[in-house]
Length: 245
Length: 245
Image (cartoon, rainbow over all chains, first blue to last red; front, side, top):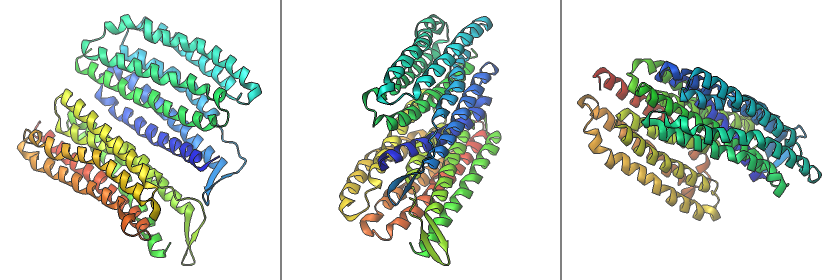
């Protein structure tokens, strides 16, 4: 591993720890600022950040056990840098993220429940399928990687379809003052989620460089799709609280 | 590294950990003492100190891995003392600091949003440009350092212009009892921020001594511009709460 690659992974992991730690505290502190109907969404935002904080802390620790920068050279200890943490993190965070968006729309109880359950199930299947192909990175395994990528794209597309098409009529029923914000939040989710299947394909194009690209890419995509997404959910909840919706 | 230099860096880092740890607790504890409109500003004060606390803790740990004082001599382990943490810290804290000042003025929603976004973007560009030149410290690289210094001075000047000129008419609309305090807070921000570009230029004048000067200087400037600044924001919020503004 080159020094520049070491620095990129090391710094992006530490940055994520700081960002997720701070946002966890933010959501729990600001939970008192929204109407009771939105407190659960804020709790979920805080939990998602806490889970991401924990897993990035573990990854940082694992990275430091595997590599050390000493006298300007990267020393390899032979201890594995464990990245299964990412999938364990997503297994918890992705379903909760989707629930946040459903909760903040404040649909009817039945609607919230049925939409929530479908999205949660699709998210779990998607993360598990992605994990099955994650280890396949050598040239002979790239076929497997494509297969799991394609399989994971089925629940991925189902979720995106729900967010883009099925939620649209419901967004139009939201107060005028937040329609724009909800629509922007949905777009942030779609764009930041689109990074993941693209990053997943990095080993197809460059097996050497893909390792660093995957680590840094996933971390920054997480900051966007979890942290910034949570802040936008908070803004929706606060504006809706202000207008009593 | 001389023993006196070791002591200066070691003690200033530990001092910062204590100062930022304590101020984090202060802001979250005192959040209950201000009116609802100012609670978000207090939350941000607490977060900024928490982020600075985390990064100074990491730097202290990194410094201790790199250097040890043993039998009156500084022993070098060869493990790098990583100061990228400063820039990672600023990438999060500087935008939040500026938002604190905007929030505590309690402008209209649109004014808060548009001013906030511009200042946040300028802050991010400034920190990134500063980082690009930070590694250039040897004689042959000083040209690069000047270039990045000059480039970073563009967003820096934009932010200062906003704080000094553009905010002035808005300050005059604030309650009489806090106009002075807001003006002093603005001056604290301007003076403490002016340290950074000056410290950045240390290697231009003395390459030997600059290393210690940079580390100690940045740490003390952070205590002023983050900790003391936060306390003044708190005082403004409390006085405005008292007069119901």
